[in-house]
Length: 276
Image (cartoon, rainbow, N blue to C red):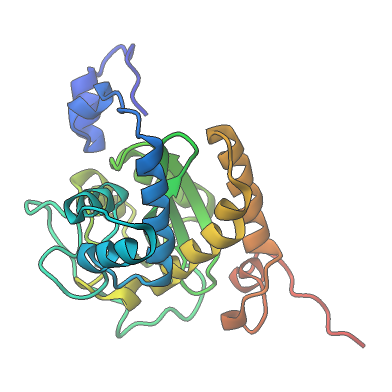
């Protein structure tokens, strides 16, 4: 996204337009120890099973099954992973106080057709060395994965890339739903939605069901793809995710869609003919 040799825009101006701190452009990630990577993976797996676990319950679970661990450390790792307990609390989303928060629009307006509403979220992806973040945008009605991107930081740029990809290929939805994270409340992100004429919706704080279909997607992606394959590096992960999302969209029947695939429900693929 950033072009260091751009003839007209400085790096500072490009970062400003993308909603990124300039320091993030120059940031060099510090290697994560093998011990911390193991701990982060355990936290992630337990969070998929028990998303209401905050740092206190997660620490107690880790101590019970894996030995002593400091709660302060668990809290730091969960914060770095972008994990928050779904139970209501004072800090259920990593938002910026200066950014506006929009009301949740889907409670009284359940989508009835494709492109009525899209939803997005970010999840943590463990790697043999370090970790990445995955953002995906799905069509709420059909569960079709419209776009996805990977990043090694929780900045706004990769979320914008996914949004631009989805808009270019599928056109704008009526409503776009996200959590209250700083990536989605940023000026760069919300202004792009406004320019496309999209109504902005955001989850209520501590309300897990407000974005339930993306949460279910993460569980499927991790248990059916990421944790089964142990991808050695980023290119391998990109290839594996590309194959998985193709399978998820086009070949994986969904019980909530009467056993049709997301692509069939979205209208991209024809449903199979009834057996005779």
